[in-house]
Length: 85
Image (cartoon, rainbow, N blue to C red; front, side):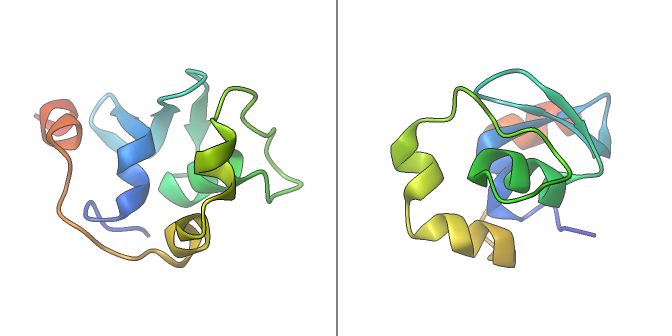
């Protein structure tokens, strides 16, 4: 399970205080399966989830998208703290 410090949270918002459900900040899709599944949605890398139609290409293609999928950590965002209460 991904940490609340996972930098994928820069691109998502937890739904209902549950880290297993998150909403894409670009298209609004609610993803079940946690932040890793959402990162796959943003990066267009999984055959198991529909690719995000609204993610900016510079985000999707940036070198750090691979880092997102590797789960590199950083400080939790203000949005994460607000959503988690």
